[in-house]
Length: 476
Figure (cartoon, rainbow, N blue to C red):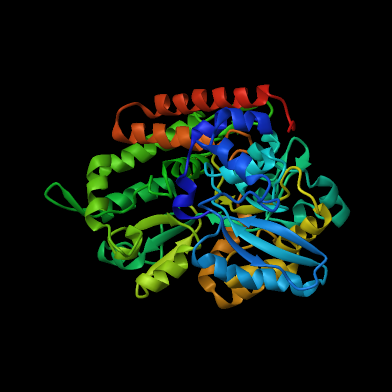
């Protein structure tokens, strides 16, 4: 998941744990959904794509015995970039054609797919964001892939460890990871380091050094910040910042044995206290926000603009830097180590997966496409080449190309090799992201203590999780 896609939250969806056709129509979750469904059922060709959101690119190959409908979340120009992927799959076999449809899909915008499943007219294949997998499995939106995976001889050794884990829930495999986001590389600006008499080839290796370097790199004119060392909460949203720094400090976010949310783990609290303290070193949250506002422009992230010394960034930013700031002098390394006994190199992995919607037909053909796209060298390497992406399939030969031809991407490969975490595999992830987003911000603003902020996130997320689990597992 990239950029602001990580930040779309709608906790209302979390309070409707299961969808039957009757429940969906009664709840009216889409505001007029009942009218849409009843008017569309006879004529939607078996795929409710959504009236305004679906941008269908029909690619039905001639003389194909089977056509599978593939729902993906990549709109705009990205749809055209996907065409070689569909073409390549149709080339490797002669029975199945691909009909691809763009439908928004993040932690909140899943209405079209949920409606299609409730109506008994799902697509054959759907992309599903990694942290959504457990929720969709619990809600009855996905079919288990366990039998297909076992028959294919696939296992966790074929994928990056967190990528495999995020798709396992209640002893079943519900999706295969397609892409793996190494969250995150620690970037530092070598020119700013040199200007501050810091060794440009020696980034901070501990969180204590990060804070010290931040103090050295921060420059002010009166009360206004002109340059700063790091903005610790600026990590694709407050929730993702909390996960990132929390794990660095040795925190935990979920107790799987107790099915308990642990946002207020003592080391998570320490991490948030540290984030607040670093912000105060720069003049406080409001002052830093004013600084961000004053610098914002067409160049994107502040790190691209030579006014921010250090930042956590994803591998997709390399292309953005090359595009808007090709002369930027920077390095990339592992995340700095947290205080003892936190483990070093404590990064995490996100990314998209692909699964079978509940009630889908043509499951053998759909699985063949999923396994080709997610667990074949040809499919994963092609997608990696098309989008300069890192596949969840660790055996992809594309990794050899990346390591040899793109030295900066090599650092992200090393992060994938050592990453230990994925967002908690539990069916209230959207609520978890939302509560962290809201309450971490309250702590940064000084409205509540870090302890109270994370306690609130824990209580609210646990309540939603308990509500979801009360409805039972795996019912349609």
